[in-house]
Image (tube, rainbow, N blue to C red; front, top):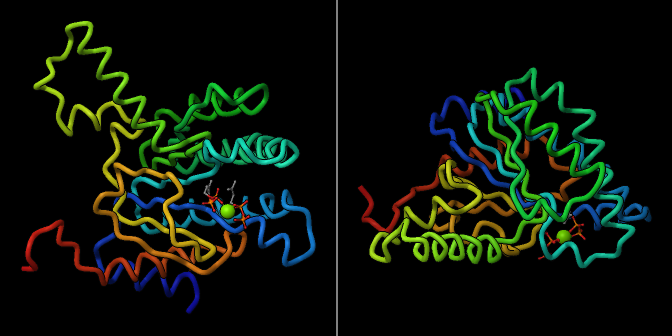
Length: 247
Ligand code: IPE
Ligand code: IPE
Ligand code: MG
């Protein structure tokens, strides 16, 4: 099926996930299969980002969360980290105006104080430039680890309690969720992980509680909008029960 036939199928079946999250994995293996250095796999993965952003816009997804760089990824060799940071800057430089024109609001979630120089400046610029848009919110998770996010939320709560702004008996799920980077986002409806890996790798541990999972064997640089539409079609056949009995 062509991408537009798949999109018709998606629309025909109604339930579009409001929030799709993707663990974009497999760039290194894509490069190795071609005897190329790993950074060229990351470079090739940029067009897949464009594909899924456009696919999400076409399908009417409201929130798209992309795991681009984990806190643990800081342990990779510095050549690879530097290549990823310059690609981030290049992506923003190339796409910012287009994203703005498409009505995309870009947000960057994670410990971004670790980003330096041009990458940090580019991130701040695109976030400010697109802040007024509402058609699609694109959450880029960079320097992000879910356990660190949860520990940070606990710290913020402790500070509020210590300062008398919050009583211990007011610490509930909502109070916690409000102190996560994703505070004003609904939980993901669908999580896609590419490259066949069957793990969460410290991504959105709190937010994925009832998310539907879709593991795709496709390596990230080969992932296009058709793959996104296929994942949504699969999601549309799921029965979400949230612990209740089927109706
Ligand atoms: C995903 O691809 C991109 C990042 C984690 C930054 P990988 O670089 O993890 O690719 P593989 O898993 O080695 O194939
Ligand atoms: C997860 O992929 C992080 C991102 C996609 C940014 P990794 O390749 O880092 O995860 P592991 O090491 O295989 O679990
Ligand atoms: Mg990987």
